[in-house]
Amino acid sequence: MKRSCIAGGLLAALLTPLIAHADWEVNMTQGVTDLSNEIYGLHMAAFWVCVVIGIVVFGAMIYSIIYHRKDKNHKPATFHESTTVEIIWTVLPVIILISLAIPAAQALVKIEDSSNADMTIKVTGYQWKWQYEYAEDDISFFSSLAASSREASALGSEIDLDTVDNYLLEVDNPVVIPVGKKVRFLFTSNDVIHAWWVPDLAVKKDAIPGYINDMWAKVNVAGTYRGQCAELCGKDHGFMPITVIAKEEDEYKAWVAEQQAAKAALAASADKVWEMSDLMAQGKKVYDTNCAACHGATGAGIPGVFPAMTGSPITTGDIGPHIDIILNGKSGTAMQAFGTQLSDADIAAVVTYERNGLGNSVGDMAQPTDIKALRK
Ligand SMILES: [Cu+2]
Image (tube, rainbow, N blue to C red; front, top):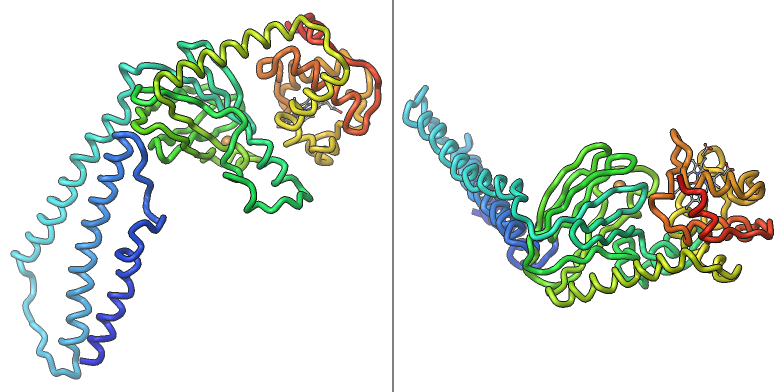
C-alpha cells in the first residue's frame, strides 16, 4: 500500500510540470503560418501517442513489479507463444505508424511546394551575415548583427548583457515581408554552408555554396520573428542572426518605396566628393559591421589568422593595392571580394578609415569615383 503511494506520487511529480506550466517554453513553437501550425499539430499528435504508449507500458510494468512480485507468492503464467498477442503487437503499432505517417507525408508535400509564390527573396549566407535580394522589387541589402549586440559581445566589453534588447538576435537591416502573401525563399551561400532558421515561420534550410534550396512561408500575423544561422559556419556562427518583420500589405509597400529611395540616394552619393570627416565616420560604420569580426575592432587582427590593419604594409602603403584587396578579395583566403557587397562610397570610406584610423595616419583618402574607376 505504502509503496504504491510512492509510485503514484512519483508519477504525479513527473506529470505536474506538464499540466502546471502550460506556457513553459520547452515545447516547439507553434509559429505564425498555416504550415507551422500543421507541423506543430503533427508534433503534438506524435507526442500524445508516445505519452499514452508510455503510460500503458510503464503502467503494466510497474503494476506487475508491485503486485506480481515473488514475495507475494504470485504464480507466474507458463504459456509459451500466443498468436493472439503477437498479432496484436504487430497490427497495433502498424496502425499507429500509418495513421501518423499519412498526415506527416501530406505536410511534407506542402512544405516542398513553393509554386505559385507571390514573391521571391534570394537569401545568401556569408561569413557572417545574410544578404537578401528581392527579385520583383529589385531591392538588395546585407543584414548583419546589430551594433548594440556587437558592442556588448566585443572582447573586454563591460556592457551588462541583460540590458541589451534581443542580444545576438537583432540585426541592422531586417528582412521585411508582407502578411498573407506566399513568399518563396531561395537559399545559397557565398562561402561555407550556413542555414537559415526562423522557427516561427517553420523554415529551416541549408544555404549551400553553388546550390540553391528553396522553401516558402505565408505569414498570417504581422510581427517580428527571430532566428539564427543553424549550421556551424566558423568563428562568428553565433553572431549572424535573422530578423524577419512581417508587415501589412500597405506598410510593406511603403517600406519598398523607402528602400528604392535609399538606393537612388546611394547612387547619387557615388558621384559626390566627400569630406575626410564624412569618409571617416562612414568608414568606421562599414568597418565595424563588415571587417571587425576578422580584423578586430581596434585593427589588431588575430595573429596568424587575420592580419592586423594597424601598421599593415597594405593599409599604410600605396592606396591602389589597398583598394584592390577590398574590391576583389584574395582568392583562397577568408578575405572576400567586397566589391559585390559594398557600394563605391562604402569602400572609399572604409579604405580611408583604415588608412587614417585604427592607429594608422597615412593622410590620404579615397573617393567613390576612385573606386568606380577601379571596378573591373
Ligand atoms: Cu552561418
